[in-house]
Amino acid sequence: MINSRIERVLLVAPNIFSVQLLASNKQIKHITAVDRVFPAIYELAPHMIVFDYDYLNKDMEKILRRIRTNPYYNKIKICCFKSTPDRKIDSFLKVLGVNHVIYRAELQNPTKAAINHVKSILDSAVTDLLVNASL
Image (tube, rainbow, N blue to C red; front, top):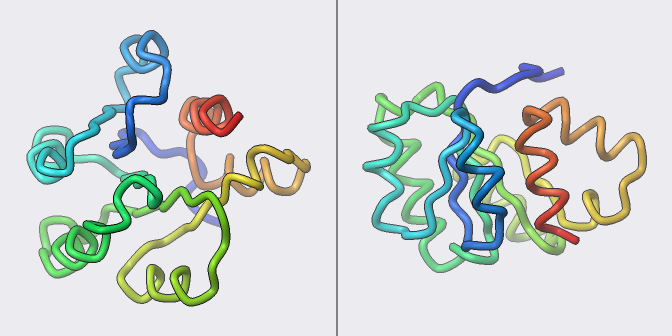
């Protein structure tokens, strides 16, 4: 299995998450602008970055290539949140350095195995945010 708990998480997604939950949680930083990704990585030094693929699909390849070619970002785990599976895109994301891909269906139809899989990757606070946003 994977590291069961992540301390600091950078969430790159549209403004669909509850501001109160994010404001009270100091381990999660939420950004919506693509140009703030690298300054936020430098400020927070996250253990994991969660990208919303549907939101960033045009800039995703450029961001992933930049992260994976810089040795400063070596230990950062990358997770991608997608609405639907697509074998070609998913395999391309894996080649670019995405560690985990989580689909909206896994969170909307929560079988025990799917939720346990997501909770083994992410902290429960991040998992709860993703579940609430996917509904």
